[in-house]
Image 1 (cartoon, rainbow, N blue to C red):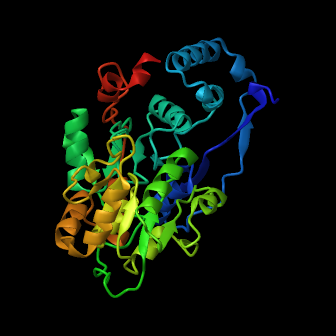
Image 2: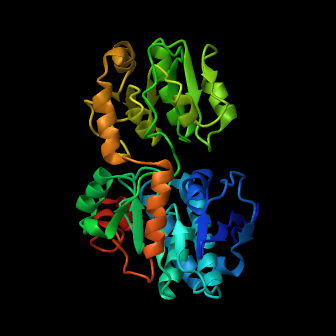
Length: 382
């Protein structure tokens, strides 16, 4: 077994553009920021690795890992122990490494994710050196992403800004609305879903196999015989092929949004950001709910627009009634959460970048004592 201190972790991918430092950790983050900086997204798996080394033995690291172990014992989640301890080691190593990194030559740091511990380490270093951090989300914000520990945030729509401000108790004027630079669909005509000949789509997220198995079983028991499965960029394709009925097909040619342009009859997903894209195109869209879990994305909470699927019977009812869905209502809700994308969103983001001249206090630290996430999450006990 490899010692904890020698287990490699992936470094963030960085590049310089427009006077700023651009930092990503996933293909979706690349897709979010590449149009802003005017390059093709690098969708290859990041290859640069590091090891925690002596940082894994620091006194502070040992104390945090002891707290992690105790927390997971209390919650009976031993399967998370190795990955969480690895994250602690990697984060401490990044904090030590960043002590010797000068970020002041950069006018700003541009991120598409604010939750990853290695990116939080970078945010801390940028704050110490007075370098502003700008956040352009790689997806619609989830209820777990109301934290905006950055100087500037460029969210997608008025409804998203209103929801974040109300949930986290912050001034909405601190948040810009720029749309979605990573898509170009807001000006597309609604596809002809009746005459397209494209079957219904099951758009999957990279969920655990046991959860995906339950979803596939629900749809199979509903009697769906012709379905296109649209994988996530991080999906395990071999696993999906094991779970799929033989009469279903796997979408292998391009992104899910490219498939949606052709007008599938309906879309079923489980709390996925792709629901905004399908709704914007007026494609009837439903949300699988396992164990009464609320949707991660607040825009999915309106069950009159996004039917909640708890059983095979719910699936059959949704598919049977898909042709009668009020497509205009669906599109109006999607527009309220993100009304523009493509070149216009890129232009609005560039305007924000041009205005940035100095670091500002964090918009909101939702994990600080008293913050909305600290008050409501079991992780506050960590």
